[in-house]
Length: 213
Ligand SMILES: [Zn+2]
Image (cartoon, rainbow, N blue to C red; front, side):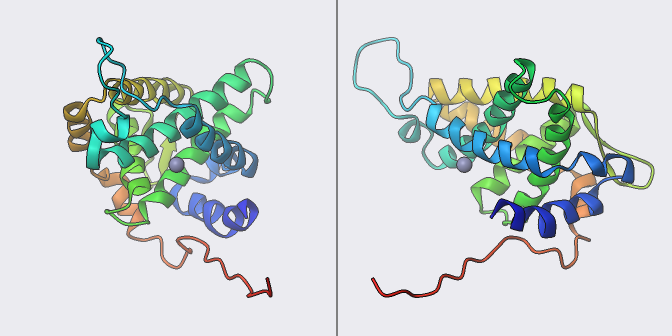
């Protein structure tokens, strides 16, 4: 599945979005690891809001209401990246995967934007991309292609992951709204490229043969 998404979608998107010198950093292994670690970040996240008193427990989902899924998908993306960098720092993954993960993550986030403005993956991806542009780890070169500064992006991933963790653990509905309001739009330099993606597929469609049970 991952290979089927990587070659025809992620790699082709990378060729559209990036200058040729960073295209070799769009790598399937980074895509696989990040996808797995995104799911683990969901599973390892807290479920309940940390409270000062011992009163009724409130789930993060209940506290963040309609903002929950956007925050949670974004949180899983960012915490998944933190995990990946941590595994590399501790020698469980090769050091070189960090730069590839940063670039592949940016390309994959643009892929998520294509799911539409009402989609939680898409909204989460917009927050990450806007934050990176705002903080300066994602810029564009003179041909309008995206350029990623992997080391700076690693720092910004950490910062944003901490903000999202904090919103989740405190069940901060207002903070979630402010973050979505501030960073939820698609940055211009990304939007210009997104409009000209053309016929690269958005996602896979599963066709399962009916079988006798
Ligand atoms: Zn998820």
